Image (cartoon, rainbow, N blue to C red):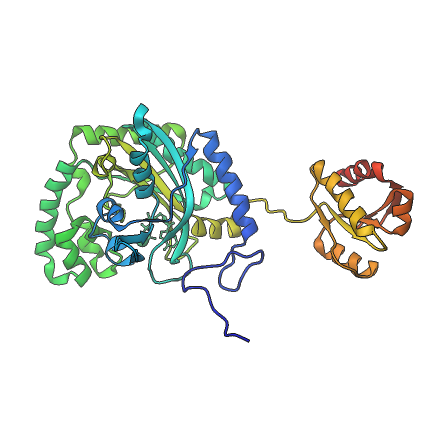
Length: 430
Ligand code: ATP
Ligand code: MG
């Protein structure tokens, strides 16, 4: 026997059953995907699917060289033929915009798009943090807002409602203003950080020069007081940025969507401006952010397209489903309506034919395969959870009848084959 090979650390199999350290099942995931498809459709967003591998330069240019994601978390390798540097995508926005620019999808100025799929980041694996994880992303391209900012936030809130977890999530919002405002604030912030340089940790000292806003995002408890006293970006915003932010807040109020203003919310990717937001929960321990997004008005131009104000968000499917599985409502039903048993010469073919015609009427039918005693088959029918067993023996086969057994009431009836459907439907209703 060969040695067993294991999955790559931080990358999970999605099985029909829960695993010890990864409880999500493929059935729950599939039910979620169906909700997502209906939800995006109900807002008029179209799906886009892009490759998992892209040129490394795409992410360096869009996400930013100094970010953790590009600086140390990407799976990057040289394509063996032409030495081109390639990377597994660490997020979806860059690929989405690359495709939009490449195929000139913005010829009539706007697109509302969504995507779903695996992303890759070489982080330390733990509950809610994986190396292959999955996101659903929504992007509204060609809209200056703030109405579309409100639509996207409301759309995310609606998804939480559909999944029954709205009450476990808190919305945090902030405005990052425009580039000039950030530059003025940055100077004041660097000044302030210089004054506190003796207490900064190594990460913060490095970020002070590369990306000082992120110092305020520090999780280090020793730096909290320093961070709280730092110059706040909102105080540097001009009238245009403030008015965008005010209108967004008024629309959220009008839609009945509660939010917390967090002036230190900056997000991990470099491309954001104006509106940023996150949905967090207290139910998942340290991995508290389930969804994050914001406006990225300069990004499409950065990627070679024409200037296009845009906004989007991405949610982490694993984190969301961990929450849904424990606290939400998402109907998962893999139980067949009818379990079909058979015994005797030629009955297995007859069973398959009956099953096919019942399936054509919309029922889910599990057909037993292989030779086993009826008693053993009935046991399996019971443990399948099906409410009804259909039995086809040699007698039924020659009489063109079928026997139905109600596994709940134990009632048993033999009827003409063509009457099977109506009896099954009666029993299902009862
Ligand atoms: P975090 O602060 O938790 O690292 P992030 O700011 O890096 O999150 P984004 O890049 O904004 O995350 O991605 C959007 C969402 O994707 C996150 O809110 C989270 O739910 C999910 N996510 C990000 N990284 C991971 C990961 N390694 N494993 C599982 N989910 C992730
Ligand atoms: Mg991260």
